[in-house]
Amino acid sequence: MVELILRAPAALVEPVSDALMDELDALSVSVEDADADTDAEQALFGEPGMPATAAGWERSTLKVLFEHGSQAEAAATLLLAQDWTAGLLLQSLQAAPEADWVRLTQSQFEPVPITPTFWIVPTWHEVPAAARQVIRLDPGLAFGTGTHPTTRMCLRWLATQHTHAQPADLGRVLDYGCGSGILAIGAALMGAQHIDAVDIDPAAVRSTRDNASANGVMLNAGPPELVAGEYGLVLANILASPLKLLAPLLTAHVSAGGWLVLAGLLERQADEIAAVYAACTPALTLSVADHEDGWILMTGRHA
Image (tube, rainbow, N blue to C red; front, side, top):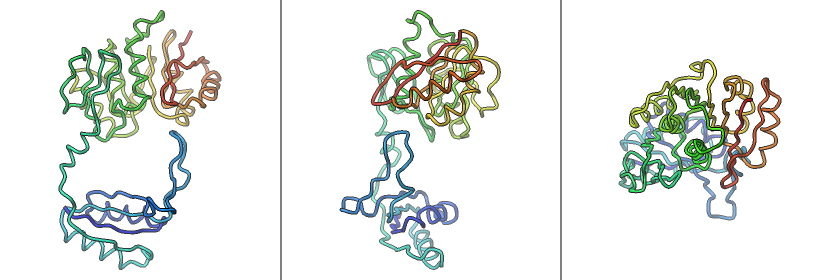
């Protein structure tokens, strides 16, 4: 494995990265602030759910992995010879440090307790002794590892809903924007009889199918066109902007007496989201059912 390190101005980061991945056989490209840990360091990201304060750093370091040194040399030579890459600089070309990349990635994910007895456990970990109900999960390329507060709140709601005065009807469940399939699998473990899990990302659909198989649950995973009819429970853990756009669609698929559960929302977005869903036909009254680390879970039930 060989690492090629380039220095690029902001305008070149995206086209150079695309060229490296699409045409020059790079295995991966990572982008870092070239001025990190200096007085010129630039803060790029704001609070969760908010757009970046800038499209990129003024100067970036591109760290590019290749399988062979000859590929890295050819890529650097070709890029630096182009007129459109003026300002691109070669910083170094060296053997990449040896690492077990799979093990390194897996080490970032540990078992996550949802309740004292309900846990999310990565497929490469042993099941904790306290776990009585378990979701075995391999996130793959999809969002949804159980480590984020929005996912935990959705699963907590599913795990405790049977104790509520008005329990959810888990006959038909829709997980809209399923990611890894973790919420759909959670619904299955809680007794759902028919589950449709949909996502616009084909990688998420594949991940959902694989994870469902690993957990021995039955569900239908596919693109949003799979959605049909009404559901006793509709789950959507996305972000505020798409949840506003999807409001008419999501409310239309909630059956009479059914529940809508929304996550991916910040506390300050509660009133805005509630107003959007109250204006739908049929109208749905949402309230905050849970909160964690600045994120909230909103739920509502059709009359």
